[in-house]
Image (cartoon, rainbow, N blue to C red; front, side, top):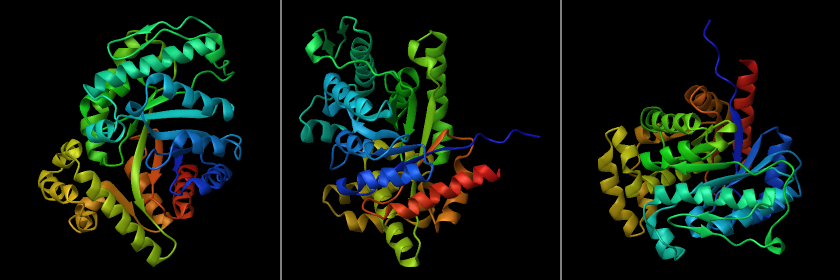
Length: 352
């Protein structure tokens, strides 16, 4: 008999604002979800997750993702270490590059060769953490970053559980290979169909990871994790389901309008959709864009249905393909139905 795929580890993603983060994390922990994550959109995830640490005991608290290039490696190292200390060693640091306009025009930071910069960025953060954990002299010198000063008064003490894992988000081949080469895991972008993930992302990631393991890179002592991200429209009533379906459709349109994500559409022969959506995004016509996402495109990038129905489809698509499953509901939506979906997925693995 063929082996059954390993049970999916689960991740709840915050959809509520700062006031609701501690309660949402506590509810996810109560339901037995292993990880709670918050993306960096309108709020700093490290700050909000540190608040959630006070209301939880065992659940991992993850940035999913924090914008790496908005910070220097030292700034990121301090923020992440603070969360790790506050939570008793439960921090998981998910990093993303964002795209050039946001890094340059919103954050006022440099942008060039993002995959190479990210590779060095991760190495710099690890060097800083190693200095704090061991007391050894900090002496990191790279092409993009240099960190050579760390006096005792500025060095946090070591954390008993060790340094946090670092996961990288990526879409294109250079950044996803960087994840395999230097990180503890890959966070697949929500705008990634299972076909694109299997055919165009995971082969390169696994090859890069195998090279790192063959070279004896020290971080490969930790197991590598692939986090699958699935856009999900669910609800407990028809009205809630339809409202969330519309929200997910508009999110798909937003991603599809971004030039960096066009190759994902081209996997399915839908590159022309980007050509329609991008000019509308430049003019800020976000509501109109959702109408251009038909049901075929929606079904490739998202799952919809009441919680048990959505869970069955998610499990069918992702079991055996990824190690952990992160379910994305629309921003501002009630987190309860998404947690219902995760509970139903866990039940399917239990039955299996």
